[in-house]
Length: 246
Image (cartoon, rainbow, N blue to C red; front, side):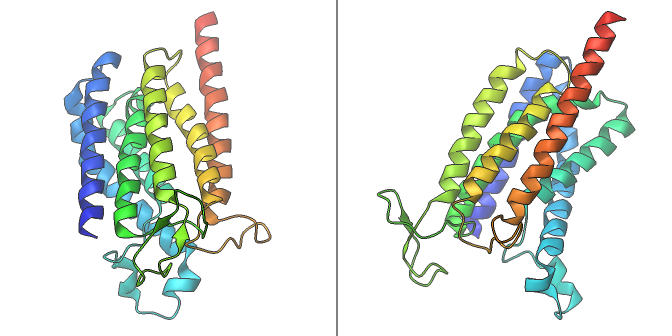
C-alpha cells in the first residue's frame, strides 16, 4: 500500500506539472492549473469511493457498519468514479473563476492518462486490479499468500499503464494540432473507453455479471463514457463550425 500511495502521488504531481506547462500554449497561466489541483484531488477521492460503494454495495457493504464506507485503507476506489468526480470539481472551479471550461479540459486530458499510468503501476505494487490466469511467457506471479495463490496471471496493470502512456503521448501530440476547444478531452474519453474495455477482458479480480455475464462494471461504464465522448465531440465540433460561418 505504501508504494501504491507513492506512485499515485507521483502520477498526480507529474500530471499537474505537465498540464501547467501545456496551459501556456493555450493562453492559460500555469498557476491556474496548480490552484485547480486540490479541487481535483477532492473530486477524485469522493467520486472514486462513491462509485465503488455503489457498484459493490451488495458484496462489500450490505449489513456492515456505516463507517466502512469511509474506510479506504485497504482499497476500494474506482477510476471512472474518480474521473467523474474530478470532472465535476473542475466544472465547479472554472465556473467560480470564470475560466474557459473546454480549454481547461483539453489542457488536463493528456495528463489524466499520464497520471493514470503511474497509478496502474501502483496497482501492480499493491497487488490489486490483477488479471485472470494464463500461461503466457509474460505472465506475472504474485506471492502465494496473494488472492491468486501464486499462479501466472495477465499483467493487466502493466497493459493499462503502457496503453495510458501511449495515449498520453498521442494526446500531447494532438493538443498542438487541435481544431476546436474540447477536442482533446473528447478524444481522451473515446480512446480511454476503448482501451479500458479491452484491458477489462483480461481482468480476473471480479465477476463479469453484467450483460448476461459477459461484461464487467467498467466495460458497461465504458459504453456510456464512449457515447458521452462521441456526443460531446459532435456538439463542440458543430458549435465551432457554426461559429466559423457566422
